[in-house]
Amino acid sequence: MSRWAMIMAGGAGTRLWPMSRREQPKQLIPFIHGASLLEVAAGRLRGVVPDACQLICTGQGHLPAVRARLPQFTEDRLLGEPCGRDTLNAVGLTAAVLHRRDPDAVFAVLTADHIIEPHEEFARCLTLAFDLVEADPMRLVTFGITPTFPATGYGYVQLAEAVDGFEGAHHTGRFVEKPDQATAQSYLDSGDFAWNSGMFVFSAATVLDAIGRFAPEARAGLDRIAMAWDDAGRDDVLNEIYPTLPKISVDYGLMEPASADDDFSICTIPMGVTWLDVGSWPSYGETLDADESGNRTHGDGVHVESSNVLAVSEDPEHLIATLGCDDLVIVHTDRVTLVCPKDRAQDVKMMVDAVAEDRR
Image (cartoon, one colour):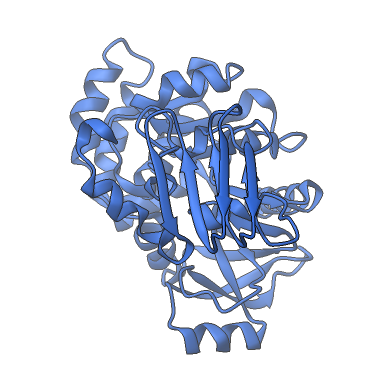
């Protein structure tokens, strides 16, 4: 069996507007010490998966920007979606293409919008997941992040008994999507639940089998796309069929029904890592050092009698200066400057919807 990895990089990241925009989605913003989140994600595969077996799945419109920032990813390692059809089809497309190239392929599904440290622990867990699936291809492996607070915006996975012969791996109890505050607190107190990381390791053949059972319409379309993948007419077939695939997430379309099917074995590996979902400006701020008043700055900034201000500028020569400001987010680009209270940062998506299309 050969080991592969696919990084999902298809999100728009509207909560990180105005830096995240059509030509530069959030996974390609170079704001992590000069690197993008996608570059950071690719770097995590170092020493775990061979370079030639690393893939990126992204929107067709983002392919030029991906090539520019990650030129080492050759055309045969880029999967371009003509439109977003949620994560089940991104995973299914990868499985279908890999299965045609290598019927015994085992592949990891990884995210492009997280900071995960340390690398050694991530690599250990990913290697353990590959070992699990290679020992039993009917295993579907996910990764759990140890919760540090009762989050209501994340999904949870329940850790059941240990998997014999694979130290650190557990059978999986159940999946729970975004519980209320009291339930999340009970999960945190129990120690039996982890945050669902959205990362997986599968056999390509098993994924296709599962999609055929639980989403047969998707399987039929993916098979047609895979048959044409190495032909001259690939783009025509992809553009015709992919937009018609049923839109559903891998959690609802694959993991949940498979957990109720005795033919499949769902396993979870808890990761002892720090895990930051960079999905909003306050979460991005956690990647920056704070001054004594809690102000965090990317670029050039001066803060006088201000506290807990996040100031971000694309232009290193543009100074953001605040006086007597508290709990603000300020983001400056060459075309847009955003200012909002920190507690409204999750509503930036609503602001994007209110801005004229040609100004976004």
